[in-house]
Length: 270
Ligand SMILES: NC(=O)c1ccc[n+]([C@@H]2O[C@H](COP(=O)([O-])OP(=O)(O)OC[C@H]3O[C@@H](n4cnc5c(N)ncnc54)[C@H](O)[C@@H]3O)[C@@H](O)[C@H]2O)c1
Image 1: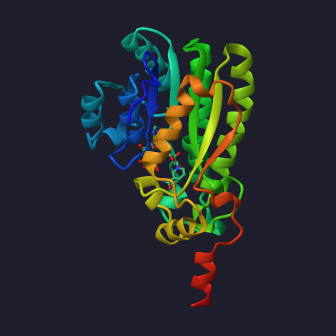
Image 2: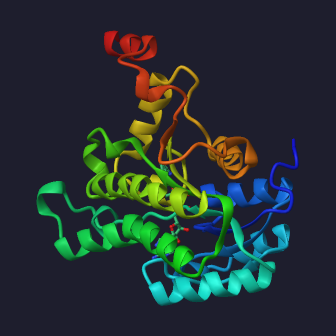
Image 3: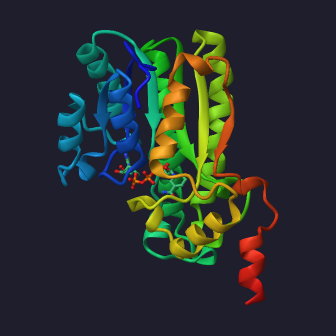
């Protein structure tokens, strides 16, 4: 159901790789809610061409940008404002990648160049996005900037490896930049800490199926899906959440507040 929550709003959505991506679902919901936006992803990810289907569906233009490149981001923000005919009201950073996770390195055998790549792609890019937005004065007042995180920022999940540090940094950047952008332009900055979700990035983490099932059995409401996450993102881009900023917002069906659940007890008793 649509509520016209984003009527007249303009934005940039990073990270729609395929129809499993959280960003893909956010784009579909943002379109339904009346937003106009530009879709972007790393040039390499675009080779698969799937994003063009989404662009057609949402009447959006696609601009490639490697989120670690300030030059690419400058071009993206300049062009987006031209295409959309004005400043932006929302930005979604839905980006994560760890070469150490991809290549199955254990936490005691990390490649440090790859570790830096993990931090650059998955966390520092969020700062770069906001710094470019600030320097170009690209955000409207009361705009909303959002990134996606995971509870491994606070708790240890062995297979999540160096992505745990990236998420901790991402959440910290949201607080620091949130303070700055709030003062400067009344722009809010938050992260959503999402349940395990069956996407390309999610299922790439070792043992994903086990911790997906575990989280689902721990959470009184079950795991939040990508569609649920998209709905939450829409509320955070809407005018209904204008005073929410510098927060890491848990969107996890209750997982983070549970010690143990009946389902897990029953399983242990088997
Ligand atoms: N899937 C989960 O279980 C889960 C849980 C919590 C948080 N998240 C977070 O949600 C976000 C979206 O991931 P997803 O699960 O939709 O998976 P996904 O694989 O669909 O999306 C990840 C995106 O990051 C993009 N990307 C990688 N390197 C990039 C670069 N240099 N420049 C620009 N884009 C780049 C990829 O092309 C891809 O579109 C990530 O931040 C992820 O960590 C995912």
